[in-house]
Length: 271
Image 1 (cartoon, rainbow, N blue to C red):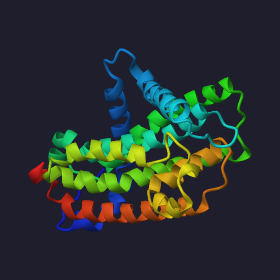
Image 2: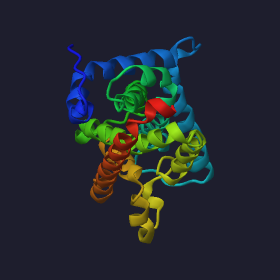
Image 3: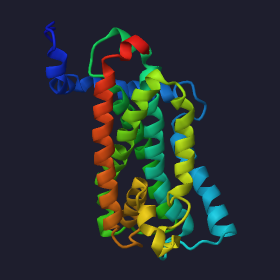
């Protein structure tokens, strides 16, 4: 690759450089996957154990103790697990992308490349974890002898939507975290709080009708209900909630890229 030094060229050629450095995205993703599971006793099974154990806890608390209803004829555990996968994708992508520049400080401060590849590759790692956990979802469906509906392959665009919902806020938090390290503490609180205001351990149908629109302003509501529609087929297509999720994903992605590009030139100096 030919290196050209020219004033203002980086700004003009930024998006072209993003395409030129596309291989770096896969390298960073594979490196982070390898580092995440290196020297771990259970290894890659952590990607399976986290949603599985959370499913057991939520099924016991919400299904057995609180006796909340499931979605249609679907077993409560399967309803929870179908929601846990997109939520885990979102929370993992948000947390790792928010801290990605700080953890890659040496790389960012010494080598030129479009810095947005760093948080974007963190979302790629979350997608790898999601794919591993998705295999377990198939086994759980076999265990319950539950056949997927015809719209099952809608999980592919829904997975992309979940990643985009996480990437926008991730870019915002990533930009702020470089200068204000307090956001390392705020991000776990956001994901923990979001878990309980999202329909992961319960069905969206238990939310009163007068609060439904406000409830759906949480962009993960549309994603989670979309997954349940695609995997279980026990709910109607959540058109309004998915539209809100798409609008929120687009808005936060625009805001995140704008803020990231505005602060990117100072990353190497303050990181």
